[in-house]
Each structure stands twice: as C-alpha cells, then as structure tokens.
Length: 243
Image (cartoon, rainbow, N blue to C red):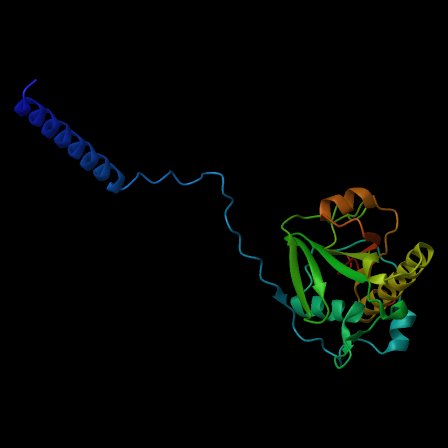
C-alpha cells in the first residue's frame, strides 16, 4: 500500500469518528421526554374549619334550685334542632372554660387531668368540642347518632353527646384509678348537662348500654380513648310535666 492510500484511510477514519462524536453530542443535548405524572397520588384535602360557637349567655336559664327541682330523664325528642346559641350554652355548661386565666372548667377532673372529651354526634357529622376555643372541630362527615344509642326513639335526638376519656392524659395513674376517676369525672359532666336541660326545658337521657367497640371503631378512636357514656339531648316531643 502506497503512502497516499494510507493517508486517505487515516483521514476517512478521522472524519467518521468526528461525525459519530457530533451525533452523540447532539443526542445528549436533546431534551428528554418527561415521565408521565403519577396517577396514584392522593389529593390534598384542606382541614375542615372549626365552627365557632356563640359566647355562652351567663344570665340565661332558670335559677339553680329550680333546675335541681326540674331535673329529670326524658326519652322522647321532637325534630326541632338546637340553635347554635343553645348548643353553645349547652356545651359550655357541660365542660366549658369558666376560669380563662387557668383554663379550668365547669366540671372538675381528678388531678386536673382534663381527660374527658365531649363529642357531638349530629345529622351532619361528628364533632369534637374544644373548650378553650369554644368551638366544634369537625371529625367525621358521618351521622353516628344511631350507633351512639341502643334505645328506640319516636324521633332521633338532634344531637347525642359522647363522653370519651383519654387515658393517656392520666399520666402514671394505676389502671384501677384511670377507670374509676374517668367514670367519676364523666358523671360531673353528665349532671351539668342534666341541669342545663332542666334549666332550658330540654329532654335528655344518659345511656350506658351502648356497643362501645362498634362506636369507637366508627369514631376512629385511639386505643387510649375509652367511651364512658352517651347522652342524647333535644327539645321534648311533648311538654315536660309541671312546666
């Protein structure tokens, strides 16, 4: 092979390598096709807004001695809903803050544990009463009034209060003390509800015969949360005797 052929072959190889390198550079510079967006990402749901309740009317209702005289159990309810004002007054009477400087409430708790929560089961959902904000915090968009009672009513009560003890707030108390004091503290709240009902001519009944396991599952409670009692309340179906 003569010298010119060798030079020609080397020049051809160099040109081929240069072309290949340019092609590879062009491919790497080309924008890649973006991957398709994922289809299984859950939508972001904004937290539900708490319902602010009207301030309690501290000058409303009957005097204490008259409320004690009128206190009774009434199991039949009308279909008339409770107004926001009446509901706010009721929840404040049950377990509201009556000493804002300390946050202490209308119902006492042992060691100031404040382990009792009041849930409100209504036709439009389940709510948790926040005493410090005097507001209802939405929990579930489900009507749990039937699960919260085993009694049959002519009409479902407009609301059912569900008293739940959060045993995790009772610190290092023995199990026997947690059971005893959470039940005792619930009794104070329930009696406040009874007295408020008597003061405002409402019907109410406390319920202990409930399926706590089914109700706790429906409410999505944590293991440390125990349902103690429930208490339907509303306007009476018929006038309460003596009123």
